[in-house]
Length: 376
View 1: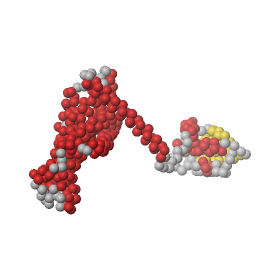
View 2: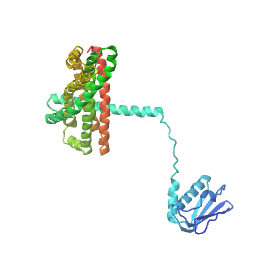
View 3: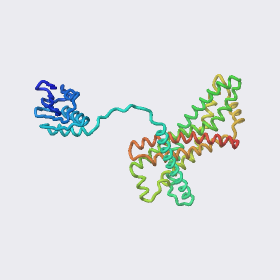
View 4: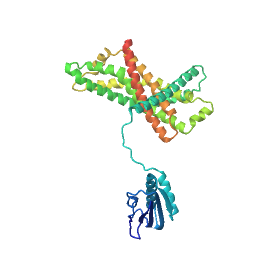
C-alpha cells in the first residue's frame, strides 16, 4: 500500500516487505499545510519491524515530530521494532520526548466523594481548632504575665487602639444602629397596629435593641472594620518578617501585638453597645412619632421604661464585652497565621471578618440560652 503526495508538500510513501513496514518520508512538513497522517500509512497492518526513512525531507516543523510520535506509539502498541534512518536530529529528539508523555484526556467532572469531603473538612476543622486553642492558651499565659508585671505590654499602644476602634467607629455604628431601629419599628408596627396596641411598639424596640440588636450591630460593624484591620496589619507584619524580628529580640508577639488590641476591643465594645442602644431607640422613636402612629416621644420613652430594666442593659453590655474579645481574637489569629504574601494578607482580612461574625453569632446564641436559664 502506497500513499503519494505532491513532491513539494509533505509525503509519506509506505511499502511492506515480508513483516517489515518501510515508510519513506519526504517533502516540506508544515503544520499549517496538509500533511499525511500515520493511520493512513499503517492502517490494518501488523508488522514486526517499522523503518522510518527521512532522506527525502526538505523542511520540517512540529508536524513531523507529531507524525513520528504517532508512529512510535503505534509501533509500541503492536510490539513492533522501530528503526529511524536519515531523520533530522531535532525532529527525532522531539518525537522521543513527545512519545514519553501520554496524551491527556479531559476527565469528566463529577461530585467529590462524600467520605473524602467529610475527611478533608474534619482534618481542616481539627487543624483550625488546634491553632485557635494555641493562641487562646498563649493569651492566657500573657494575662498571667501581665498581672505579675512581666508582660511586654505597652499601654500607649492599647490607648491608641482604643481610640481607633472606639471613638473613630462612632459614626458608622450610630448610623447602622439608627437604621436598624427604624427597620424594627416599621416591621413591628405592622403587627401591633392589627391589635390596636401601637404603644407596645416601644416595648418591642426597647427590648430588641438593648438585649440583641444594639450589641450585635456594634459587634458586626467592628468585625468588618476593626477585625479586618487587625488581620491585615499583623499579616503585613508577618510578610515583612517583623513578627520574626520581635521573636528574635526576645519580645513576645502575643504580649506586644495581640493583647493591646484585644484589651482595647474588650474595653470599648460595652460603650459602643450603649451608644448603639441609644441610637436604635432613637430610630424607633422617630418612626413612632411620625404618622400614622403619632406616638409622642415622652409617651414612647415612658412605655419603654415599663419593660426595659437594668438587667436588659447589663445583658447587652456583657455580650458586647465578650464580642469584643472574640473580634480581637479572630482578627489577630487570622493575621498571625497569614501567608507571607500580599495575597495572604487579603485572605487573612477576609477570613478574619468571616470568623469574627461566625463567633459572634454562635456566642450570641449561647448567651441567649444562658441568660434565659438564669432568668435575666
